[in-house]
Length: 198
Image 1 (cartoon, helix red, strand yellow):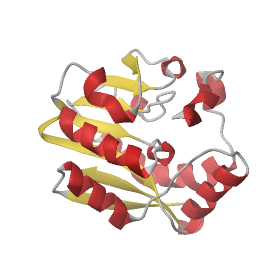
Image 2 (tube, helix red, strand yellow; image 1 turned 90 degrees about the vertical axis):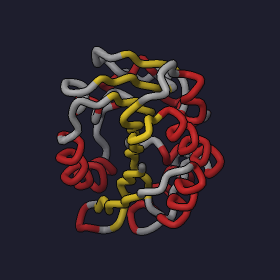
Image 3 (cartoon, rainbow, N blue to C red; image 1 turned 45 degrees about the vertical axis):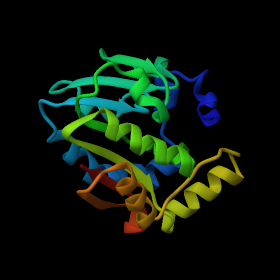
Image 4 (cartoon, helix red, strand yellow; image 1 turned 30 degrees about the horizontal axis):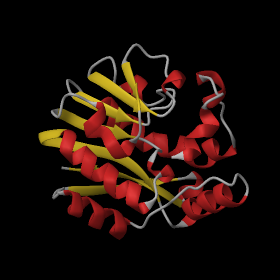
């Protein structure tokens, strides 16, 4: 996951600096995402790719959280953050009994093979009733433009996926109950979706 190397010199403050894409896609998506997250209580959560903890802040007061990130220095929240990536969760955590594996805006860094591994690893560390909650960039609308710009202008290897691709990979990993919620961008143009899988 060499894409994460560019964050090694970042701080939580510089990482959180807003850009045009935040206003076009992230902030409109947050109107649906934030209320959903604020309802999660009394859970044991594995937060994968938490960055500075922008979304973790909504969870850590009412839940027990362990974080995993390639750049753990970005998070200043009072939680345990392990250095690692989404493809080897089972090797990084001792407990295989999480209620939630949670990840926001991280899967764009995963190739299809890495996304498959992430889903399988998430299933491995969840308890019997546990759920995976993650975001996926769409192949439509702003999702297409965002990934194309990242590859062309920034030269980063980012990925977006069709819902059908994601559903197939989740089923392959052993998830059966799969719910997908559209996350729209500015002017309600398609951009991404929230995936909840058990």
